Image (cartoon, rainbow, N blue to C red):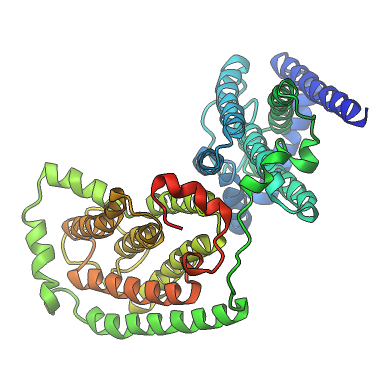
Amino acid sequence: MRTSRSALWRMAGFGGTALLFSLLIIAVRVRWVPLESIDRGIAEELNEAVAPSDFLVTLMGGISRLGSFGVMAWLVAIGTTLVLVRKQYKLAGFLVATTVGGLILDPTLKLAVGRLRPVVEQPVAHGGGNSFPSGHSLNSLICYTALLLVFLPALRPRWRRAAVIGVGVIVTLIGFSRLALGVHFLSDVIGGWSLGVAWLGLCATAFELLRHHEGLRVTEPLEEGLEPEAADDLRPTEPHEHRPGTAWALAFGAVAWVFTFGALVVVGLPLARYRDGNGNVLWDSTIPHWFAGHRSDVLGHVSIVGSEVGNTHAILAIGLVIGAVSLAAIRRWRPVIFLLAVMFGELTLFLASAAIVDRARPDVENMDGPMPTSSFPSGHVAATILIWATAAVLVMPRTRAWWRWVLPALAVAMPLWVAVSRMYRGMHHPTDILGSVLLSALWLCAVYWLVKPNRDLVSEEVPEPVSDLQDAGVPR
């Protein structure tokens, strides 16, 4: 009886938010004066408070990006990959249906309502298209809450309430950031939230009806998730092997980072003295000039792609996919921790050493224009080496299938493509590439020794979920 009443209350709440959204549409369409007065007053006050502060503008912009399509698309793609690998097809369908529905509702309703964006005295951001409803507010509520409902069973009960509150805080901050940046009215944000709750309610109700049809009980989604029975499949297995203390690993990791940084500075500083063609160590001047003299439209297009596959966004995307597949297929935290430590260390080592060495770019046309970092080492090449080498390290010991050799091949071919592309475009010297190889080799070896990402393969006890991969060629 309690579950039935709870379901009825939820349905009533979803119906109430749908009614609120309908009333807001009517008020916006007829340009109801009290609502417009409140909207414009809040927009002007927030603009006066935020626009003069560069810090607040940057902060609100960063929060707003958490609700952007680029961020949420990757989160949903990773979440869907995780549940698909664990054969939770209904949950994958729920994630896809809810998020695609939001992507359909947002632009169509914007066109139907046709409300213009706020006009403020000191504009600090630009929003494309019409204003009502707020797409960031709508889609962030849908995506983050859908992911919460799907993965809530994987959390321990004591963490579930904190997760619900955390998602609520994120969604609220994203909505507020759109107000603070002056690209939406208050009613736009409330409209996005109310429509998001209504759409999620409809999808969750359809999911519960499907469970009922299959003879399963109705759940409490915000307390136990949509599919409590999937908890064991969604949750990584507990490691059986002995784990070194976190403090020990962090301490030795810091030491390894300092030694790697020192090696980069020792190598890079002498190279930075050779500016304006005064030095030709390892043909640092000859090779960039040769590439500059042999440029063509076809090679230019090839080099653009080669340069882009090593940029931050591409490497982040590849890393997220590798992490998601590792966690879903291997169901252990060590490979994910290994990936995160390798990539975070690479980023910090690159930024720190580039700032200290401060080497000038080659004295040829820099086809990618001014860059915020210096030339040594190449961050593109280092990140490319490490992401594909990490994939090879994680996959090679776990399968005997022929395709495992694709990853070592990519770990060689992709960095070469990126390195040649960066030199062709006049962005790096050959010794910058060698600096990236030095960074990658030292840091990868250090993190592998500290984390031991494949330790479960030599443990005395191998958890049962690993056997799920036998069909793919993974040995016990």
